[in-house]
Image (tube, helix red, strand yellow):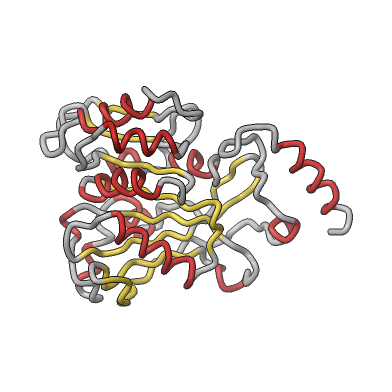
Length: 279
């Protein structure tokens, strides 16, 4: 590693002139990160955890890289996944069984979530935490989950991402407008949060990358929520413009397609897109 460290340092310094959050090479890497890079050979392992996080979170699903314990000095990107209202519960193990029925937790539970994601030639593995809320969550609940994750797991704090659907998608929007300077990117899917110019301004002001999804004929949450959020954010001309994918469908479920690792735009899925952004 003695020959790698100086080269890495010079290379990183040269890259500071490019965009902070989206670079051709991940500038947050340190020499120790490079020495601990590995290709994961097993699929992530998801486990229900009953634990008091705050008054609205009594448990969560924990998904860790298969060999997480074998790399005690490595920090991992974090996805906080926020489910819909059909997954509300008290966080007990029996209640948590509804958390892995759809989207990212479902993919992990059924062995369909890749062990590795390759971006800029480097392989990454995610920690994915899916909190179970007792009632409709607010931004502070998500912030409590992030604080808990940082204390409990080895998290790369420059690569914390929020993704949510329906109720959770709305909370993703609300979190982005309240704590957007804390996370690297967000993916709200058919988010049940009415847009306002104040929220859009806050997200744009934090230069927070957004990739939103919605079905054009969603009968549950109107698609104009996502359309207007993205339009209003971009009206402030942020360095990275918010992105919207509007599927031509008349059902609520935009998440199955959006979270599927095989769904790509410009040859990038949402996970690879997330990893292109860092704080």
